[in-house]
Structure formats: structure tokens, C-alpha cells
Image (cartoon, rainbow, N blue to C red; front, side, top):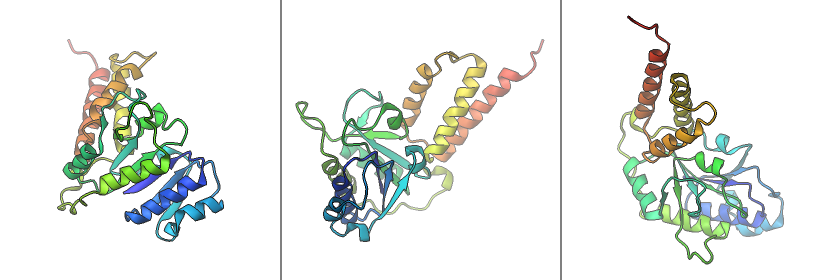
Length: 237
């Protein structure tokens, strides 16, 4: 498991997250365009030596930060920025147990506003911590603690080795397949060229819920390629 913090503003929150990563054996914490300096004494104070155990790196974009991960979990409140169903922590643990991904990125948004709708799309599923409606938003460091502890509860046994094609497809592979399918649907006239997202966002939500395997993503590419062939082949009498 790796922690990804997006546009974090306060060094103390990053320090707290680094300490939590050390507490739970998380090897790396990735910062996406942070809004503070890690030389800040508050970072050192709150990290409590966690920075000696956890690799802290920076990334220029969320897309870049989550490349290569088998499963990307985006944390969010239940606000309607993304129509996909939001998983509770027990449901997310069950998903991990079923799919047994080799690498997981858990993404947290900034202190003010959380992840944007576009950022939420850069994930397989959303995870939330149920809170009272009167005060639904958690402090970032508290959210990291609750989510990471919840996902690590009852440590999952190592997966039995199996075919590489049966592992969850990394996000960039799934995103590439969505792009290929969109091009094929545009060429065939199924999608509205002025607003292809109206249908494609529904397709992304539908297929994203299943956390497709590499084999399933290859099938999606094959379906898109065949649709392109049917669209471009000469008409027969």
C-alpha cells in the first residue's frame, strides 16, 4: 500500500501522514504538487521519525503518481462529484481480499475541498468514512489514520501466484482501453461528438466498479478494434 496526498497545504498534516505510514508499514508516501515545504519544523515535529522509515517523493500530477498500481482507491465524502458507489472501509477490505492486488495507492485530497471530479476519475473505486451529516469532513491526518488502519485490519495473506493476466489492470491500462473504446464509438456514430462524456462517463463508472483484470482490459481493446474494423470495412452487396 502507498499513500498519495494531493495538493496538501499544511506541513503538519504531511508529517502526521508520514508517521502513520511508518506505523502501518507503508513504504512510500507520494506528494502531488504540495503547497508547503518539508523543511517546515511542523513536518519534522509531526513525523516523529517516520521520515526515516518511509520514502517521501513528489509527483507533478495525480495521473503520474498512480501509474503502475494495480488498484487505486480515492477517498471522498459522499458528495455527488462522482456517481460511482462509495465503498465503506469493510467493503474496501473485502474488495482487497477478493482481488488481491499486488500494489495499492490510497489517494487523499487537499484539506480544503478534497479531490476534484476529474481527480476522482483517476481511480478504480471511491472509499469513504461514514460521518455525521452535520460535520462530514475529516481532518486530513485523521482521515489517513482511519482509512489506512481500516484497510490494514486483519492483514491479508499473500496472494497465491497466478497468471499475470488475471491481476487487476493498472489504471493507465484501463484508461487506455477507455480511450480506445471511445474512439471506436465515436467513429461508429454511437457517441455524440459534441458530448462523448455523457455516455463514456457511464461506461467508466460501470466497468470501473468491477476493477477489471489485464485479461478483461485486453478483451475491451479487442472489442474496440473489431468495432473499428466493422466501421471502416467496405460495404458488401
